[in-house]
Image 1 (spheres, one colour):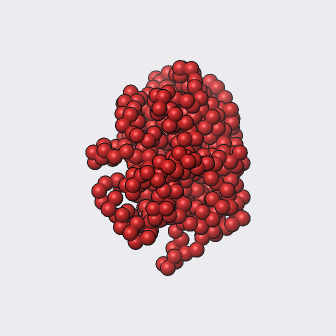
Image 2: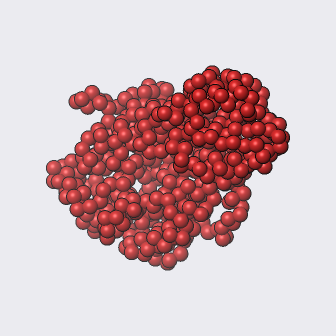
Image 3: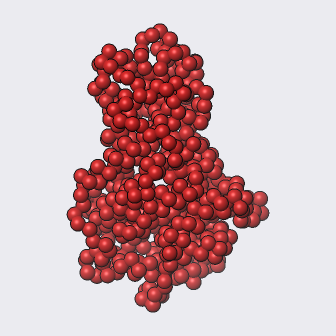
Length: 533
């Protein structure tokens, strides 16, 4: 059933009592780190916490909640379990790995774990799940954050994760409307264009968003992505990002698709929005054209002054601010936050003390089950590894110096099977050619790829490290197994030169152990591709 924010008299009265700055503060979600840096003392309707240790998060969240007269929304990105954002909790592979398991029950359980671990320290809202289709292998934003390419599979797996979150007190957010993943451009930097026609969109991204809206998603995050099929160009011939498009947020999302939950912008400072129009105009137009909450505005004295100017010019109206604030306050009332604040207790679904060991077992199970043999033309898997087997582990990864723990753990697991393991970092094609032709090694394992990072602009192997793929060393007869730990589409770029490749969809503490076990046949490796091809 669709989620609906039902406006209440209590919320309307409270919104009517707020002045201009108080209304603005209710419709923004700044980052806690920036607020601390600028030493702001205002109360905000929502606040986002970047990764910290559990104990520190508990302290700062409690402090923020205890100094707020109106209960705040406490927010994070729980895109794949709790551990990436709440350090010290169970870490899971990325969403595409979870999706590869093809188990809605496991996805639901992962959402539940995220909700319980985060809720226990005060969170009540997550900007997840990502429901963009992984249509363009070169997308620098979507990739392994997505449940996959097929709309029905995405609906099944993201829907289960969403219910695991919301059934356990955590408001979920489906993103990035109207659908990222159809471009190699990064909306952190520029405004990507979703090129789909109306019917293509309705059968693809539109089908996913509609199904999850109908199934009760409480919030939607529009991306800074244009959709020309449903919009019109401006005077420069450019199509606006969804963030500021009335046709996309009100006419399409609200009216045609019937969404009555909360709309939160993506970070308003991203280039896809503020490269399109003036920063403060973007803030005003996002609110006027359908957003309820602004994410990561620079809240300072200039922000208030600039928004006051837009109020005076008519670009932003008090009527809009009161409406958005009333919706947010009504939502908080529906979530029981006022009662929770008054009683000092959590009225949402209560759970026994968190079973950390259970959560870790689930995370490890996902890691093991998601490891996938994407291609094996030479039938190398399983590979018999004996004490005398000579193994070379090559690391061809952008920013490989950041992943020392990953490849050291992998080397450690290899040493359990053979004492003859060498490890080379960015060796170059000449050295690799010699290694593959002189009979020095019985097996070459190659960790390859690039990891997603905001503003990266390209997810492919790139710069000088990519030159390792020159020289012809992959076709000289030595068995070679490639491993992509992050980017799931390496095999598409190197269609001819990579004959055997395994995807792990992320790296957590147990991944190296399960990976080597799968390579050596200690347990069966997944061969089906559910999330992508």
